[in-house]
Image 1 (cartoon, one colour):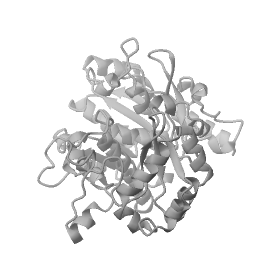
Image 2 (tube, rainbow, N blue to C red):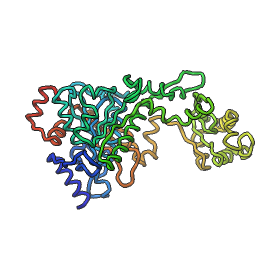
Image 3 (cartoon, rainbow, N blue to C red):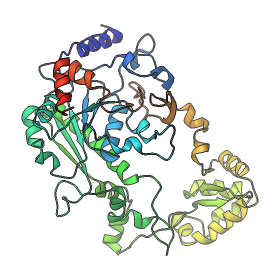
Image 4 (cartoon, rainbow, N blue to C red):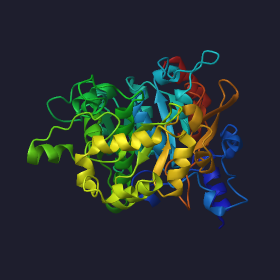
Length: 459
């Protein structure tokens, strides 16, 4: 059977509500793969999405996670970012919002057009949106029916919330032993602070990450994106994939426990061992890393900043040659990594004087030709025009039904050679947009049942 025939078979199974007896209860082969029909994807051709059939047979699937179903609970950034990453790789992600209480992220983002904001456009891409009140008995039962037919549940409530609704891992596992429950919280599911709510700002601070930012003696500033949430979402997606792999061996799911604080802690280089063995308390170092030289930003003749990084011995020698100062490579002050670190200020001054006489383009062209890492500090206005990013498909149109136009967003990372992920559609325009698709198409409910569920505010 061809790839396209396989896709059509999965599509028919989906429309008819067919499910394998082992759906969600074993390894990767235990569930009927799901292929969303192309007509369900708004303007997918305008998002750079390749055709499902008729061309390269490797791209018939939605991505490497085609056939995996994810239920996404919770709001805002960390948990839903994990859902987005899984959806980017082809998983079918069903975003659940309480009736009348949509995810506040629908109103986030600094741009506004006709009353709409656009964080949601990208963050909820490739997801279906349904409404469901998990606190009501009928809502709970409907959710468990979805669990029967799913592989992963992602939630980012305060620990204990699912248990309060009688939807903890034990209840989910009783219904589906293969279910993977991904839990994202401020401090984790255990420990003396697990009961606390947590935001990325807190996690970045409590983990020590924020202490490393800024300039010595100044206040520790925050990066103007929610880094702690995104880091936790990435670790959550990584954990989900690891648990899926293990399920393929044991047939059993498990809990993936991600704390925002721990995600921020995990990316801090050698700060902990340095403190443990020598009492070193790393602090903020401004525009450079202490002891790593040269690796800094330098002001050009027209006032713009340029990054120059040449801390490896061989690259530093090339930098010296390009600056017309080859003798610096053998100068005892700069001859090796440790020497350059000790004399970092002096070296930065030498490179800064050289850069100040040249325009940014000249600096970058000269150093790039010499094999030295150099580049501009771009704003988003520069980024969206970057030819490298465009060539790699990293700037992708998302057709937003709310404003009936394409909205540019980041592409799918990483790029896979044989089964690439893709942007299939933007974030659903309104809550419950896919209620019929999920409750009727997947669970086999009737129109009359849906009317009754709406009347009871269950959906």
